[in-house]
Structure formats: C-alpha cells, structure tokens
Length: 214
Image (cartoon, rainbow, N blue to C red):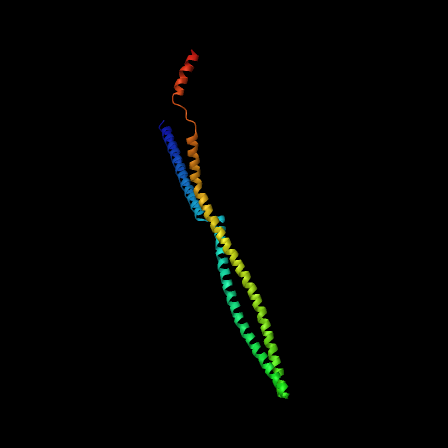
C-alpha cells in the first residue's frame, strides 16, 4: 500500500510539473507572438505606403520642373540679349565696311589707279564677310527667340497648372473637412423629424386588451 501511494504521488508530481511546463511554454509563446506582432505593427506604421511615396515623388518632380523652367527661361533671356548685342555690333561693322567700299569706289572713279582698285576688292570681300556674319547672327537670334517663346509658354502652362492644383487642394480639404459635420447634421435632422409617440397610448391600450380577454 505504501509503495502504491508513493507511486501515485510521484505520478501526480510528474503530471503537475508537465502541466506547469506546458503553461510556462504557452506564456512564452504568447509573449513572443505579442512582441512579434508589435514589431510588425511598428514596422508597418513606420514604413510609408506606395501611394504616399508616389504622391511625394510627383510633388517633388513638379517642384523640380518649376525650377528647371525658371532656370531655362533666365538662360534663354540672357542668350537673346547677348545675341542682340552681337548683332547690333555686326550691323554697325557692316555699315562701316559699306561706307569704306563706297569711298574706295569713288577713288577708283576719280584716279583709276591699281591701288584704288585693290582697295575696292578688299573692301568688297570684307563687306561680304560682314554680311555673312550678320545673316548668321540673325538666324541664331530667330532660333533663340523661338526657344525662349516655347520656354515661356511651358512656364506659363506650369504656373496655370499649379494654380488649378492649389485651388483643387483647397476645395478638396474644405469638402473633406465638412463631411463629418454634414453627417452629424443629417442624423440630428432624422432625430428631429422622427415621429414621437404619446406616453399615454400604451396605458390606454392595455385595458382594452384586458377587456377583450375577458
């Protein structure tokens, strides 16, 4: 009998230790799962969504586009101003060479010497070179003005788009901010317009039902 009792006690002790170990293991696994869930939740909160990142990238790209357009317009304006100065100087040189050629031609008409004729030839060559330079600068000026007009048009379009977007964002923020208030007002209106039963109707209906039962 004593041996049986000892065996029974050892069996119960083993069962208790097993259950204790199982409960401890369950607690540890629960803690670990809770920690892992918290970590994943924190990671998901800290990590930005693809939609938010795309919106921020678009806004950044538009800001860069505005700066690039502004820079391009400024550079083209400087280029047009530089070409204008060069063209004015080239036209002045062309006019001066035309006057020299006319003076050389007069000398040839008066004297008819070989030196005067050579001077006319040289003046004609210089005048042709000056004319070619003026033509080249005028073509460059035309292309620069066209590029500047296109850049200004693109900048004007960008500014107009930004104004439209700003108005839309303002209207959207206003509309989304007013939605909860409108819902609250609608619920209040429903409560105000709902039919209200008189408190005495139930009391009056009760005796009638009792009378019918009798």
